[in-house]
Image 1 (tube, rainbow, N blue to C red):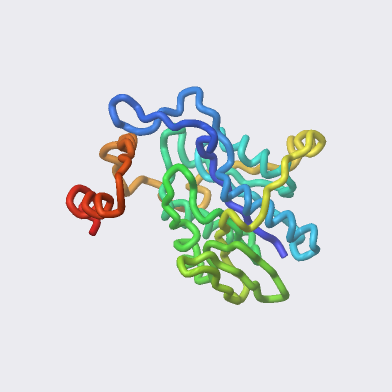
Image 2: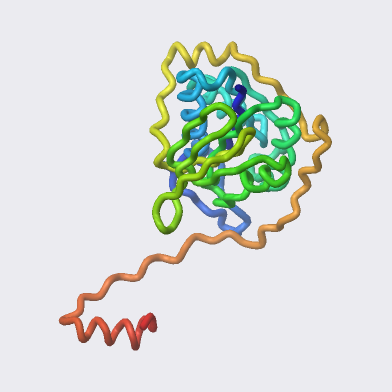
Amino acid sequence: MKVLVPVKRVIDYNVKVRVKADGGGVDLANVKMSMNPFDEIAVEEAIRLKEAGVVSEIVAVSIGVKQNQETLRTALAMGADRAILVIAAEDVHTDIEPLAVAKLLKAIAEEEEPGLILLGKQAIDNDMNATGQMLSALLGWSQATFASELAVEGDSATVTREVDGGLQTIKVTMPAIVTVDLRLNEPRYASLPNIMKAKRKPLDEKTPADYGVDVAPRLTITKTAEPSGRAAGVIVADVAELVAKLKDEAGVI
């Protein structure tokens, strides 16, 4: 079985994000970029499935700017077999919207014919949490979101999902789309020999026109601003004063 793993290039999670002075977006100048952490978990899970003999080939896919090659090389160094880069933008500040990404992934899936698509539940830059669900609708495939456990057996997959009330276990028929959560696994570090091997693994470059997909934005960002600072706490003398402040000042009760 072939598995497709979409990965996104985002600001590294250790970097403090800076908003442009004019509120026109996030400043990406000289900022460290890396693979979206949720997508990294998806790559790791695909590798584990291959090591278990369930998967025969792992294809990593990225959609965005040419610099996404670095992200794909990371996936290849971790253990992916080959990669596809769809160059859909020239400016690193251009974020391809989830619907356009889903349409491109649909075209790639129809061409590659994978049995499973593994992707992160969301990207940490825009927190859309929409691509996997849209892709499922476009392909008409089964979907399981927020996966914390995954077991593939024959033509079905058993997925444990993290929901508000706890955990939910479902069984989906293949082909399927699974979006992964943090508790699924701990991604491995790429070894130096594998990093060197990744440079020789195939990486195909495509454009949206190759798949007949329009990636023109349909959303307009009017303003970007940092969250307001957290107010200082207040020490109260007793429970009565706490209740009074919650009622009269905070207005929460």
